[in-house]
Length: 382
Picture (cartoon, one colour):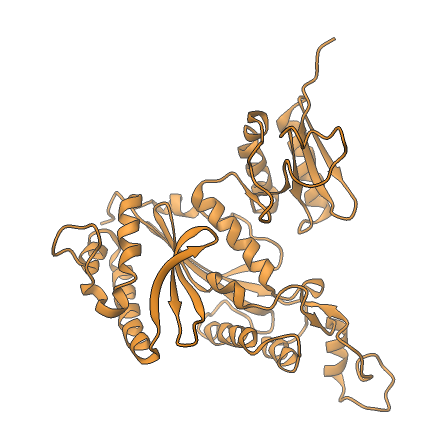
């Protein structure tokens, strides 16, 4: 019988988007009280196998051995996921969100992660009564299948950690409390993040080891041509003829670091209860008027209904705008659209115009960085 204190299945479901951004699709999911496990496949723009994609990067001078290793690890993990198609996907992304009754309980579980790889289920729980172990806490709150899964993972973790000589330490990951695995070489890998009464784990936290979107590669069409026939020095086609890498991972639509980071930012925002995501280090809600803050939930609901994600604010009071811009007074925001189709942008713009009313101007502004601009501009009755 479920412990009534755990977040319900319905509450856990609301933590993640109902629709995922373009190129992502669910290949496996486990949703229950206190747990939401999701595995996503990233749809490759190239007609071929995941191995072809990895092979194409193996000799690329702009891709490091560590970055290539992360892609190979994803390929190995994908072998055990029935919904993952190596002929369709170029990366497997997975994460587990564990929900606890309250922030204190979540903090106790999180603190226990640091001792669990050494003591397993017998690890003492910080802040708990004397004699309370991690196993006791798990059995009190978690479903039976999760307890069994955790015990197996801890047993494997104890063995792996003792063999590697690595250690665990606490720190910050995207400004949130986190636990890192420190290897002998000093390399830090985030293992878990604590946000309110939730703990998130999975390779979604490893995005920094992926190549960046501006990594130079040969275009998909170039790679396809090379694959169809053996390279011939006498052949004058663009694929056979020696030439520098002619495109980038982002331009071609392959998996890259910023794409996963953006997705993780949206997940963190939902766990924190934010209505929208602020893009970049220089953009924040500081200085926004209450008139703009009041529309966060409307913007969030509209973007989720059409794009499957929160609204992403690219500029508030920062950035360069016209001298009379309402941005500087905190009465305007710009919202990202570069990942959306034209039809989605039109629907979002029209829906926001309808929902926000005449005191707000909603405009799709084209240019070098297209976006939806919303400003508070009260109309005075004459």
